[in-house]
Amino acid sequence: MTRALIVIDVQNDFCPGGALAVPGGDEIVSSINALMAEHEAVVLTQDWHPSGHSSFASSHDGKAPYDMIDMPYGPQVLWPDHCVQGTQGAAFHADLNTDRADMIVRKGYRPAIDSYSAFFENDHETPTGLEGYLRTRGITKLTMVGLATDFCVNFSAVDAAKLGFNVTVQMSLCRAIDLEGSLAAAQSGMIDAGVTLA
Ligand SMILES: [Zn+2]
Image (cartoon, rainbow, N blue to C red):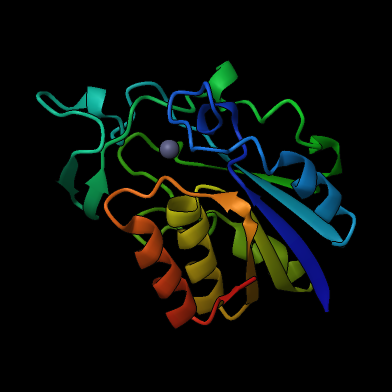
């Protein structure tokens, strides 16, 4: 069984000092680097939005960050502007070992749709291509770590389990935003989908 480590969105804007900082987001970087040695494949994901992206509160008159809106593909949390393509905020944390990455998957680059999951955009239909990459490499077992537990890690892990991968989320190497109970909901949703929380 070939194992891949999927490192979700360990980017400056999700770390302390960033535009959408996840508390403790930088604490996990060195242990993620160490975990890379235990996996045959390493994939990094990178949130990668054009400026004016539809997931930004600033793109909607009268809306504030963390408001909810209805998009054609379903409800969407509005975020502060973050991870704008080519900016320092969108860059990986400086201490993350990006040299070890076999593959970098960018997501959220279409203006009208967000993408929490590494596998599908938020319409749950449009693939990112990661499934095909993993399958053609014979990878069946995934370890997921990164930011944020209750959004991009959660959506990625649930999609991977639905696609039939054997998925473990290493909770000690994730950090959460936890908006109104979103962490607890994510944990039970992952367990229901067959994800192992380690
Ligand atoms: Zn984003």
